[in-house]
Image 1 (cartoon, rainbow, N blue to C red):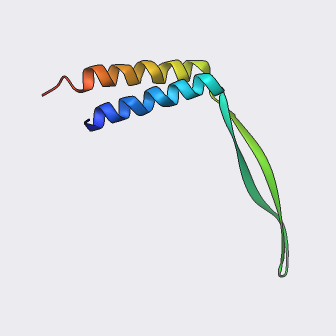
Image 2 (image 1 turned 30 degrees about the vertical axis):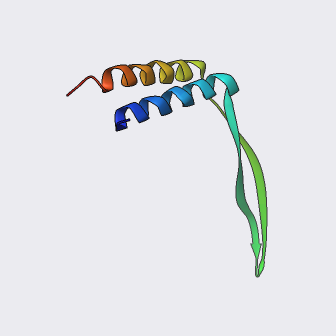
Length: 73
């Protein structure tokens, strides 16, 4: 499997995951206050929504790369 087919497969998987889950959540840690040796941190949950057009676009682009990427010699 060459690099273009690998990239195409990754785009297909990411597009499908984007459509199934619709987004992802991660935890961001920030320093709220620093008083001498004491440090107060705050953890915030951030949510990123993946638009439906981005998921469909990734699937289409991944499919095109897999089909057309290996045909060049």
